[in-house]
Length: 333
Image 1 (spheres, rainbow, N blue to C red):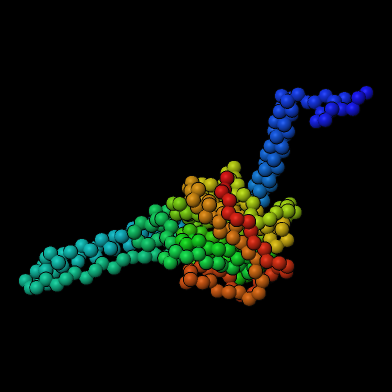
Image 2 (image 1 turned 45 degrees about the horizontal axis):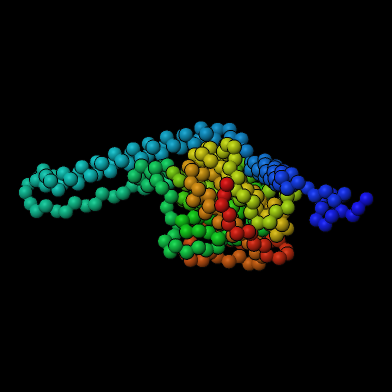
């Protein structure tokens, strides 16, 4: 037998047919794409399992309905009182002789006081019909500058907080461990959330009702199989098939889940985003903030730029090892 010709791809000197080679290349690309899609599907399924599907606590919905009814009654009472005061003031301006027993100079009417309520359930009622659903999220500061907030109970997690967002730690009696949570929202949060003495997120959530366009982000320690996943930074925010019971209870219509790596380059935290509507901009903002994660050891530093964020203070568990920074923001799917 003669030696194979230069450039031949097979023994015997026979070169592959160009069309057949193209078909083989396309088949290889399709195989690689199918393998990548399969890996992404497995990660999505794992993420959905990592995001807790929490059962509704007994009596929770009944308690929420009762508080809504009481809030409406208070608003109706306040509105009736304000209307009465307004009528009396107008009568004093237009009919001074009737009220003062004769003619005389007309005195300027006193301004009608506004009525404001802060419900005990963490919702907000400003006396103008805003019961946590009719209002729009308010910005947390007006300087338009980003800042970093820190959560010592989550291993020294530090995030860059965008303008218009608020941050809150879990209560002091759950400063670390599986019940620790960090919360981010683009609307007011409850001043004093109840203690997280169970695994039910509904027992320590700082929001009772999402405003239109509102969003609540919860960050908690990962558990189970999720902690064995090797990961650098933040995984993609994946849309869950249906919102969890907690998200639905506060008026959420969509929920996203993701995993966040710690200093060990393994998934150490689960991230849940509950949305009160469809807002790709909010999803991108959340990805930007979570992807800015650092893990810092040492004494706590107070928030800068005069933010209203209520990040944790005091000592907490820390991680040894190098400082970890998450990957740059990417578009959420």
